[in-house]
Image (cartoon, rainbow, N blue to C red; front, side, top):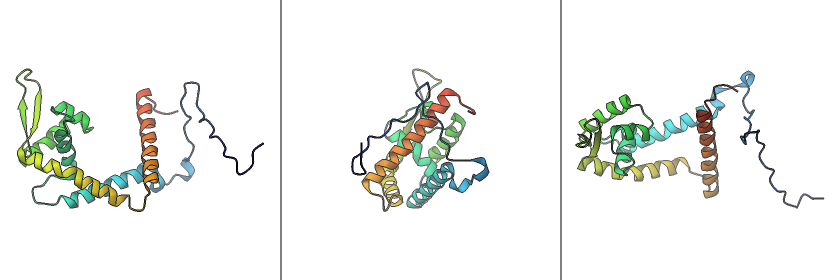
Length: 181
């Protein structure tokens, strides 16, 4: 017999026959409000963070917020080719090509055809591109910390855990090819 002061072991999460947690039932079509959806709230957060980053990097000719992502990924070595960079930035190759056109016009990177395979185009940062990319983690850290004002370290860790769980669920749905259950 347990009392109110005895800690209870957390119950195991419910799963289906394939070991998956069942879909939640938080939203209903009859009462759905877009402004209360996690997608809407996350999009608003991403937009707000992007705008804050953009204002911090407001020097004329400076890369825009969307241009900082590939610039930084190149800087840290996450990609070296157009195709790798497109995958790392979750963009199609056409969009990546247009983005690289703008970065190249600003003198921040250059495309160099591979000597081993002429079909492969490598991307290199210029000296200006490397200098600009070094600022990215400082700006992103400051902006994200400002958006997390009032959170404790524990809440921050919990939030990241919740977001990772949503991302894991999304990736599992894509992997299964779920359209509608």
